[in-house]
Amino acid sequence: MEFELWYEDFSIAELMKVACKIDDEDLVDRGWKSFDCFGGKTCLILKDEEGLRGFVNVCPHMGGSTEPTAKDDGTKVLKCTFHAAEFDIITGQRLSGLAPEGSGLRALTVEEKGGVIYYS
Image 1 (cartoon, rainbow, N blue to C red):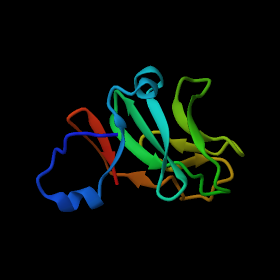
Image 2: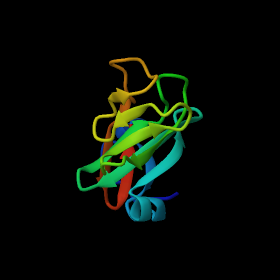
Image 3: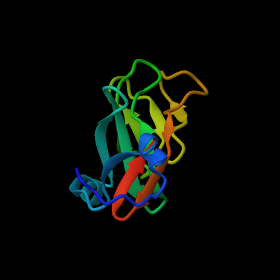
């Protein structure tokens, strides 16, 4: 992907990487996008009324990926596709399941500039 750089200090290019455009079809239609990052791991960008945020999408239990899911009561969580551990969709902290107590998904720093979402 080619984008106009929004920064003047080129050292930031080593820190921030492009995740997707803000109008990416998955992000617009589903409110989230999964993509490869950090040497083969998967990351997740979420966009909703709470804002824009991201996580390294690796469950601390056994490394499964998570997907945004609505529970029966309408609460949205990130649910592990391996063993159904649930994580807070805002903070990434473990709510229930086999992931260790006190664990969570690693949060990303996420910024939108000029229609492009960057992460680190």
